[in-house]
Length: 266
Length: 266
Image 1 (spheres, rainbow over the protein chains, first blue to last red):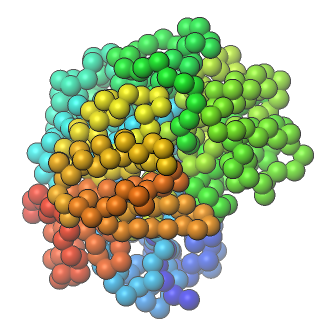
Image 2 (image 1 turned 60 degrees about the vertical axis):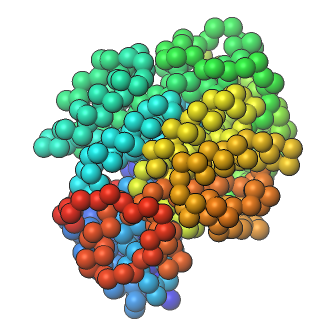
């Protein structure tokens, strides 16, 4: 049966790819995607026709996937989760009358968090710093609200060689609203060859370490280092009561009341 | 080799589970988890010793997993992503000296978004409304900042039969800061048997439809319905220029400048 599968392949290699994503690519007649994302699922390709797209041709690629899906099984592939700062929304907006399935994937924020420990275990937000499709004023308005809320932040599309202003302005906003000793990690090529994790704080962060392949994770107000792990503890009380001083407070301590050591669904 | 794998199993059945999660459970000598999460990976269980935990005993479970990991390969399993409102942080905070690997998973927000289209394609935040480990005042302070920022929201642990006040207070804050016609979806048991998706707006939402098995997704300021799909379009311009009027504006329109139809990494 014809139709379109919009597929998130996860952050890198096959290990963080879901069974549904693999099936959608294997059973497709046509696989469409930005070249490096097609390469990311090369191990699943056999008889499928492959349409490799170029950077900057997202709209044409979306249209081609929709057109081809009228008469064939098409998999439109993305890195991470196609629905997070990806191709899914613009494709769905032109997919009237097409049978579409969106296949979720492990987005970059989750992959990065897992490498660091659990910095997103308390509340968190994702924000793209790209100003290609949204005014920089809107990006700054959103970031100000998020920074004031004190939650952890995963900054997508933070900075390229030529697009440096949004990150500089974002850093200024963050430094205004969050403590200077807030942990920040610049995660580049997570779950891929050449992965690097640069540790810093809001005060010490050097923007030149941030590239277009980076995700910048800014810890939330309840985060702290526990040995090598960055963890966001919604409530310190049960942990510290049971195991004296295993953690080193980094940012502002949580405003946690004495509370029972139960509850909290995963 | 002994050690601890903290594993996110994804939202429900095996289709949204990653290869790394499956391998961690299959290769474990001991599998520890809240009963329903152990059931969720029953298809991966063979010779492993299984320790089924109860609701409300998260801390004891974390401690048991860490203790056992000193001499065995242990998989501590969670639904979704263990690092998002889950067990990972409190476990890591007591895991000094243990070899730990965190395996990310598809969190409930991503699974819900995929069922609806791409409502998280622009910026978004997750917030737990549980007040068991954090004061309600802090939850409200965070929600106010997030609501003002205009991003999409995924509300975890929104409401139980006895814990209804946080959701009522959250709804009041949202109605104060976001338009009444903002789309809201109450997603219950996503990717599981009995899945339901209740569509509403901030003005019409009936709190009694929200249970402890629900995730409440509040659309961001750039979201709209495109046929059956809820999509967040960071920039309307390229879509509308190419395919006239396929979408019906729902919330406030994006403040998008005329911009080229390129860029935006997935």
